[in-house]
Image 1 (cartoon, rainbow, N blue to C red):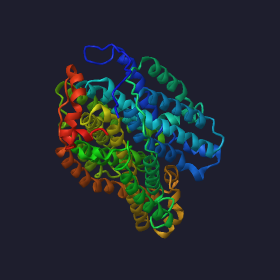
Image 2: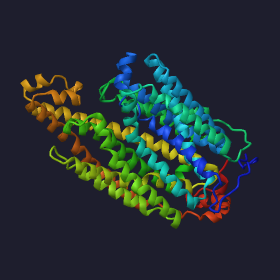
Image 3: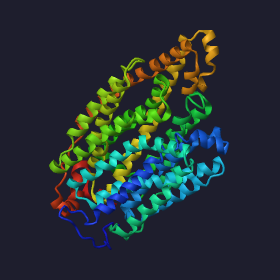
Image 4: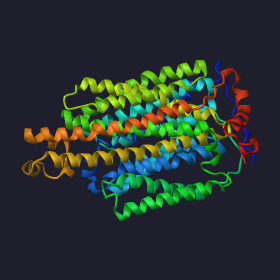
Length: 536
């Protein structure tokens, strides 16, 4: 089966090897990436109002879970089909699906309607995140790729702060439905730019879609995400439902990887795992980005609200130093990689910086200045910025053009799985510690004043008598900050992985065609796979 381009549309090239209208194309890709990443977080501050209007507090978690679940499942599918069929049609389709889901969610009259809309959004959003990164690899020579991948990495950090703030602003102003409707004009703009400016090779192949692999992967991801979301919160870890889902996840993952060894065109080909670059970069991303960054993003805003009495908006704004840190390192590191073709030093430095930042956060107490916390958050962001997209760049550079989308999507896919499991693990340890701290510190009379700890909110804490409030604040601080210390050995492991990451120098922009022609042979050497096995 051949996957060579048979009808590549002509495109003038600039001196750097990029299309002459690449600025316009890149703006469209960035818009699509921003939309997809924003919608992971934009509903968080709007949820109380949404569930109140739609009378669905019991289904609140599904508004977020539906999006994350659908996007995670969609990622490998878009990546593999893009390599087999070409990416332009898939990218346009992902935008259309995302916009349709946004319109559905914006028009929702009940929770079921809203959750369906969010799931459709996720199916499109997963495609936008993966296909945007893979299109960069199609259009940009390896050496120049770093400086364009860097802003895409910054988008993720920006959206983690901008999403909740924007959702709260819409909710307090013109209404929460605009958190979804804003996607319509922006999505239409990205669609128009991609339709008329984007020129990519079209592949005339008859694709053997791996339906069994997709079904097994969907089952495995669903069970895994539900165990992470429900375990220790909605249900006890020993509840038969959680245990059944965990067993289902193990079985589904085993069957999925077995199916990938037999499928004609597997969604995640097992040959990817023969690359040391892929294995190390994926594990490193799961450890440092999936657990490190998302654990802090998930719990620091609530910590600031509980311990310092900040509002939800203020706690979100206090994460801005982290975004500044990300942008302060991701852009310069991308420029330096483009000049030198070397990337290994940046994950090493980034992992060390993230580990130091998390260690410093473990020393926080109720008297720590907010300025100091912002400094630690800036340091965390600076470390993440040195790692995030540079790992994707390393993975893309390790494979030929025929596998670049598959490798990119698999790397992102496993990072999402790591983020889900890591956040759940941190949450479980924190919740257990908080319960123990409150039980040991509150007298029977104070516990009666406090009421149920399941309903503990920042507003409730601020309304408590001073004595009880001080006890709760101290318990919250003592419950969370040691959890950060528990993560330090994980970052030490990440530093070892960063040193073990092989470096395959990025080729210069002037030899892009040579790189494309020889990359399959290079990958065969890198992965110890015979050349005839690099494509079926």
